[in-house]
Amino acid sequence: MNPMMFPRMLTSHGEGWAWLKRIHPSVAKLYFLYVIPMSLIPPAMLLYAWRTYGGPPLPEITLGEAWFLAVVFFTAELVMVPIMGRVLQMIGQVVDASPSYQDAFTLAAVVPTPLWLAPVALFVPSLVFNILMMLLALACAAVLIFQGVDRTYDLNDEGHSLLLGGSVFAAGLVAWVIMLVLAFVTWGTVLA
Image (cartoon, rainbow, N blue to C red; front, side, top):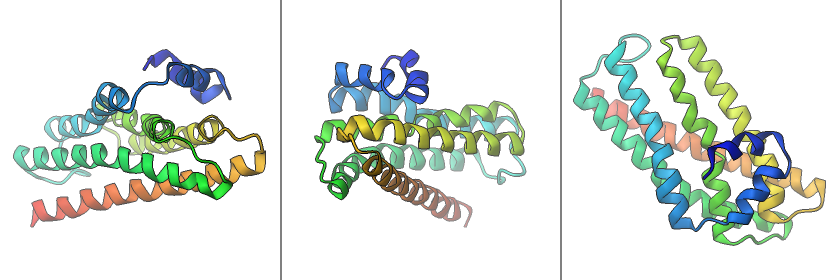
């Protein structure tokens, strides 16, 4: 995926999304060339943070335990995107739309991009700064959802777009919470 198109997906209702629809990457290509590399960023940055400045608010754990947590989180990310693709395909039934799995997977792969990039802020050892960056990433993901549902589901009705966008956002939040719970449960297991 062309990284220069990503900002256009946030700011333009059609330009970046039209480009993505035109190149129409396969699920496998998008997964291997975009999802996997982007999914590496959060665990890599967490490992960096533990190694570089550890301590509060990060728990005192060994590097091996940090690696274990990073691998669990990375695996959860890789599993969640295809599942979300299927969930997004089924959510279309809310407004009698039925996108292909490829289109729903594309939306599921693009939307978490800001969440994958937000951990780069861990280069700055400030809890407040990192929380602000995560909130900004959530806002950008919401914008991507509301910009992308029209294209993915071929909607022309603004009411349907808002309804479906809200449903997709809710499903994404549930997936994010599931991943965080998995991380905390794993974290608890490691620290026990």
